[in-house]
Structures are given as structure tokens and as C-alpha cells.
Length: 451
Image (cartoon, rainbow, N blue to C red; front, side):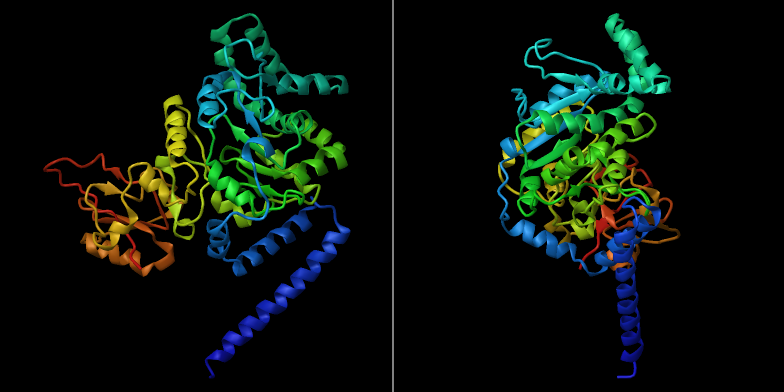
């Protein structure tokens, strides 16, 4: 009984601090601008406290179990903003095919870039609107045409107009990423104003892929008349934003608030795009001024990697996965689209990535926890996510180290030659080790923590 007293005191203190923080947050909400650094810090603390009491498993279960009350017709009620560029224009046909847009429908999507293409220029090709040029025409009368991005865009446009493809490709590879920041806000405005009314609006890069069945299931549980900002959360405490390559999802209410209720905020964002490095970060900064923050309850559904580099954490193993990114090769994008067309309307969770792309069946680890010549930790994984232990004598000992770490370890790899054990809370599709050959003394014994 005595041992429970310290715990009760801890609970009381935590409850007291939570109430105080809540009261301070409400006061700040009433008195401070939504993008004030103090208010943003308090909001981040509120999100953190909510995460302590929020169960991802509970959220995932109601999304997996059934379709929600808000019907989503992806072909008619979801609008896509696809960002491309002169230097990456060859990716677009494969992406449109993978997304089921190979027969171009201007009522479903808007494509923006740093150059212009008419729909008749190439058979079946979409209209590509020059978002960067449009921004320049809007801002030039305001005396902003001396900023360096005007000059860089001007050089690229001249090379394209002169049909100097070699120089245009060189300029696009050097400055295309910088001009990308100017496309997002202008593109959202074009998407909102020119398409038939939608419930949801999605921003994609030209190397992004959507798992539409998983995303539709998620959105069916959310009311589009409320402001939502969803995506793969990145950034510091004071600058949380959704990663553009993983797909950014905005509700109808969010865009109505930005472009109808607060057009001044949208206009200011266009000016800021001349100096902001990343367009996705600019979206977050703009929405913060309207008191709209990324909803981090759903961040773990969004993925910013190609399938083979996708790292699966233990807390999202059974969570729906809604996106892939970095599919720069046309054949990779088309293959991904084909695989998901074959799946039909089946919901896809993170663990399914293994089965879809040549990984092991997860159920088999109960009988065979060690797999020689396979690597589930991965060579490309962020070193901050991997713990390395030296002088581990056997693969079995490495596996036990992983099991002791419980939720902090999902996969492990033991290397015979160095006696090093690598453990991580993430796991990816198995790849055969490049170090393995018959008679080689360097060997990998990866495995997975068993419950």
C-alpha cells in the first residue's frame, strides 16, 4: 500500500500541471496571435500531452474495422494538386497512370510546374500550369522582381522558349528545387477555384503515390466541413509541418478558410514563397496564422519512402498506410500502381508492405526467428534510430538484447565478423546482404523480437 503513494503523488502532479497548462493555453488562445511563438510552443505541449493519453491502436482499430459516416467518392470528391517541374517532367505520365489518371480528367486534378504545357502538346498529356510564372506576374508590379528567384526563373524560361533543351535541363537541375516553393500556395488556389467543389484536397509531388483505399477509409471517418491538415509530421517543436512528398491532405473547410475568409493570408504566403526554402513548410506557416495545425493523431499513416526502404515501427505495424514517395523511376511507379490495382478494395496496412514487395511473412517468425543472409534493420536507416552493441558473441545473444528492449526493438542484425549487434524500433523489407558469399566469414543473422 505504501508503494502506491509515490505513484499517486506523481499522478496528482501530472494532473495539476496538465490543468494549469490547459488554462494557460486557453488564455493564450484568446489573447495571442495564432502564429505567436509562445502560443505555438504551448500548442506543441498540448499535442504532446494528448499523445500520452491517446492510443494509436484505438485510432487504427476504428479505421480498420469499417468505413466511417462520411462517404468519400475519390474520383469526384477528392481534388489532386500535382507539383512537377521542367527537370522532372518525365515522371508525370507514369504517376498519372499509377493513380488512374492516364485518361486526363481536368475535373479531378491540377498540375503545376515552372513551365507551361498545353493539353494538346503531347497526346493524352495534361495541361501543366506555370505556377511560378503566374506568381511572378502577380508580384512584379509590387516591386519584388529584383529578388533572385525572378532572375533564376527568367533564365529557365528563356532557355525553354529558345528550345535550348540542354541548357534548360541544366538550369532545372540547379534551381528547380528552389522554384518548387512557389508552386504550392498558388497551386492550391487554382485547385480550389477551378475544380468542381471537393471535400478533400491533396498535394502530391510527381514522385508520390497514394494508396487510395487506405486514404479513403481514413477520410471517411473525418468531417470535411471541419478544418483538417494531415500528413507526415516533420520539424521542430515550434515548426511542425507535413512532409510534401508523403502527401498533404486538406479538408474543404481549411481551403475555404484560407482562400475565402482570409485571402490576405494567401496573398502574404505568395510573397513569402519568394524566400521560403520549402513549400510544404510554407503551407504549415500559413495555416498556423488561421489557427490550423497539423493533426498528429494521423501522422503515422503517411510514409515518405519507396516500398523497399519503408521502415515499419512496432506502433504502426497494423496501421493503414496511405502513401509512398521517392518513386523517381517510371517502371517503379507503374509497378506500384499495378500491385495496388490487383489488390482491389482491400485495406493495406504497413505490415502488408513486406508481403507485397518480397519480404518474409511476419507470421513465420514465431517458428523461425533468425534468418541468415537477410537484413531487416537496413543499411540506409537513420543512425539515430539504430543502437549498436559491440562484442556480442552470438546471434542468439543479439536476439535476447532486442527482446530486453521490448517496444524499443522490432528488428535486429548480428554480424559475425565484427561481433556487432544492431537493434532498432523500425523494420524494413528484407534484403539479401551484399557481404554474403559462400565461404565468407562476414555473416548477418537478422531477426525480429518475439512477444
